[in-house]
Amino acid sequence: MNIGKNIKTMRQSRHITQGELAYKLNVTNKAISSWECGRTEPNMGMIEEMCKIFGCTKTELIDGIIPESPQDNDELMAKIQKLSPEQRKDVLLYIDFILTRE
Image (cartoon, rainbow, N blue to C red):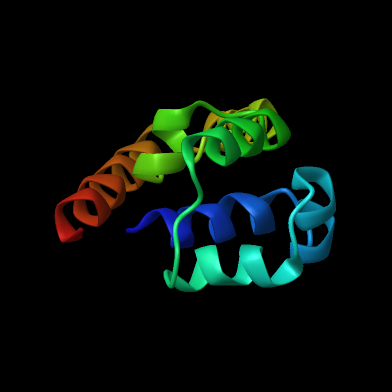
């Protein structure tokens, strides 16, 4: 995944429009679009500002690692706790399958 796709993913996961991000960074919508399409790349100063806006690290933004929200973890754990031991084994097998597919 390239940085443009990572910016788009981070932006969308936080329900921020291109226009809103452009406003916060004091750049044009066209600049955001250009980064997301991979035509250009933001400089390190812009990356640092986006990290502040997205609440992530530079590594997360550059490498495409999306931090999990605590709410997602709580929801997942609540659902797992409702499963029988046999169902939990099935879930673990499925997770292993998904991880080996990538």
